[in-house]
Image (cartoon, rainbow, N blue to C red; front, side, top):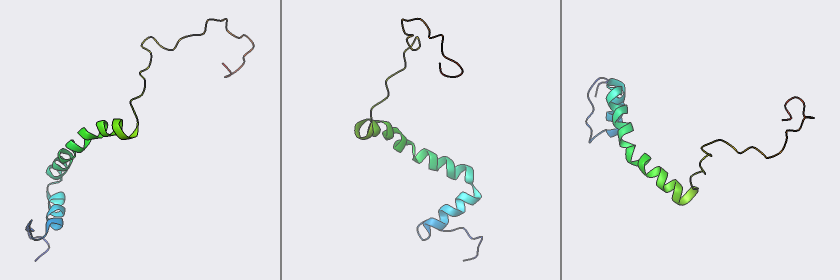
Length: 79
């Protein structure tokens, strides 16, 4: 087989994928990303089940300030 010949999928699947990745990269990578869609859809439920839960949401109105007067002796970045 010459270098530029079109590879047959069933005989040389790796070479067929390499050929299409070089000749039509936009189609090849679009199909590759689309094939990963179901994997990405299952990633969040599996993470919640086996690894860790979602984080606690931040307060909507910001963090609460302490009910005391500000310390006047702080200097620089100590505050």
